[in-house]
Length: 238
Image (cartoon, rainbow, N blue to C red; front, side, top):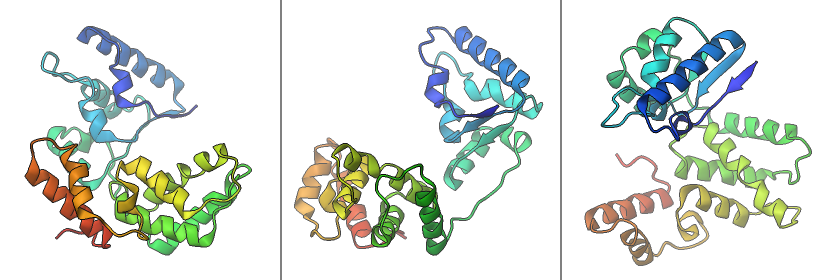
């Protein structure tokens, strides 16, 4: 028993023919049906929805798995964001039959911080206890720059990724610099964009995006404007 969380692309990886993917998925369905106490969890359901589909094979992983979920052959949990759910329901109306849809509201900041404190205390031998100022700064940055996930998930994801580099360096205390470096790795944004202690160099940021969004100056300008808004704490462009 337990929770099985395969990455969607792994389910269709290294298979040269469509029939091989179908054979693999049907075998997995059979094994999960026997296990009974194992839960399949698709953490990014919109990605799962299109896994294995291509021009030569319109049948993907979801087309094979969802009928078995409707039949109740094994427990399946799907996780997605509101925008992702809208896409899924348009593409696969069977989802309404296969699942009970539960909408979860983000936690308020103090509730998220309380959960983060409990998570920190319960870690096995936490190498670097997180200070209250660092937790609050992490919460602030998560809401600004990790908005693809809601609270408290974005905060916990940030904290999970935070400790290892400091531990590898043999340091006993985490700092704001560690937090900014971690967020930079997660978002691929320059640290000067993320660090409120530094002024934003719009020219340097424009060059940064122009080198990555080739031939689309309007898109680069839009990205610069969006990042400048996030830097100013404006998280809703409307």
